[in-house]
Image (cartoon, rainbow, N blue to C red):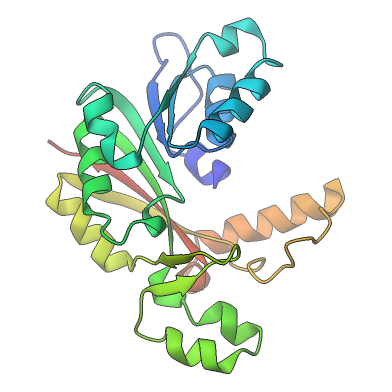
Length: 235
């Protein structure tokens, strides 16, 4: 996903530093990556523990990296109330919408804080492929129940919700956000065990290259566990 995002959000250069907001930043994977690439990043998360972990990680970074980060505690749907409207050149919301029964308020907040012409990056569970994981595992009862639905139980045992690409695209359009690209994430590796060891560098690079290619190629991206959707605010 980081590789996919880099194609739409280049490194900062002279006059090219962007203001980025990461809604639901968690432990700060993208916050750290984007500040290292020269951008100013605000991280918003409802978990004090995760924000504390991110502050600890930032302590090991260079001062010029740390000074470009601002962390705010708050819910995703409150982003527009907590932060300045139409301010951010790029807004990320990764792995958040699946925990909201109604994604509308979060999408409203995303649209509200994105500057005109700004980029939006969403990572959601793929509602068009919910039967793939249980089917590949041979759990036929769960696979049969996944057809046509949007609810599922995730890896940590939490009931969550998936988004279908067409429905999400329409919801974005209603909010002045035009989809410009979409990718699959976890095409081949979704059924890997949670405790599977990380492969060595050569094998890991081969794995990521195959995943990245599949994530931008039909028909593979359509059956990915997750969808990475890129949009622009048009008005």
